[in-house]
Length: 260
Image (cartoon, rainbow, N blue to C red; front, side, top):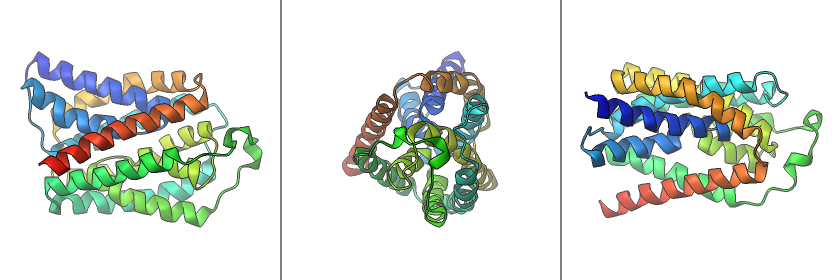
């Protein structure tokens, strides 16, 4: 463990956590491939998919704390949405995290690839003037929201993600939630989800302590800054950035699955 290792992990954590706060995702969609490939390419570390999923589970928890804190004074945290989806995704992510220890690395990467490509498709579906709707008039199907969150939770728990990179498209496309409310509420839901994922990963010995601590420090610094920037960017731009990031990640993961 040298200075190059610490700087690399910290830099990865900064990028993922800044994007987390800005786009309402946990950051695992960025950090998972970066941790899997960058340290290995630089010759400073070789993490397995199980280890990466454990590290990202810890990072997601602290990144979402920072993001939720930044949004705490606004009207964008939908408490009813957070309760229904948060409770369901917590259950799903816990069992997904437990079950992941029985899966081979190729299986974890496959699940990650499926989640990513699904999110890309959903982000490309046209959204009809959601952001023009007054906050007081927002309505959604509570039980559909809970069911979808449960399914996302299982997959998110397997890969050590909070699931927000899939929750955000679901909330925008299926539940018809405005963009800024989606971003703020998904951070809170992902925070709850990451508790289940962490419990599953720790109980099965999939968490590397030092890189996780480095990612925590980076998350607490960068996530609030990302949230501040996200409040000022046009919602269409935010959606486009998220779609591009998820697409790039999905292509990389599937190339590795198909080639190797």
